Image 1 (tube, helix red, strand yellow):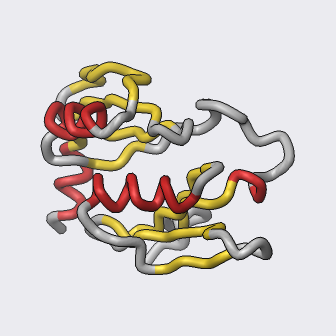
Image 2: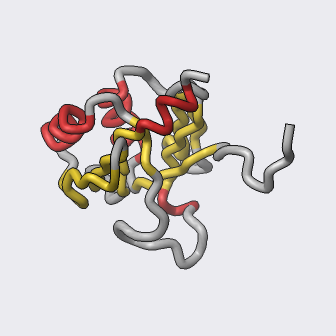
Length: 139
């Protein structure tokens, strides 16, 4: 095995003013409840985490009060894409659930098509159909 400086993402965090509402929205979209939750000093839900996908990636929703200083208040920064098998259907469903289009479905090359939405909490959710992902996951 060859060592790599970046071996895979550990946790992807989104921020929300109302973590409980964001947790419920994502649970509805994902079809699974958060597997871990933590309350803050005020007794309100401060963090909720899901395990997703082929590698059980951690997706967390954290109270916006705990965001690093200088963090973007709206959409901005890095954009991470999740592989989906049905890109048009996923985008249609996200918009029906209250997300808004950020980037339309865009063909990036053979086997690579991307799109993104802004969730109701101000976070950018990137989704893509990625043939390389499927090839790697099949190994």
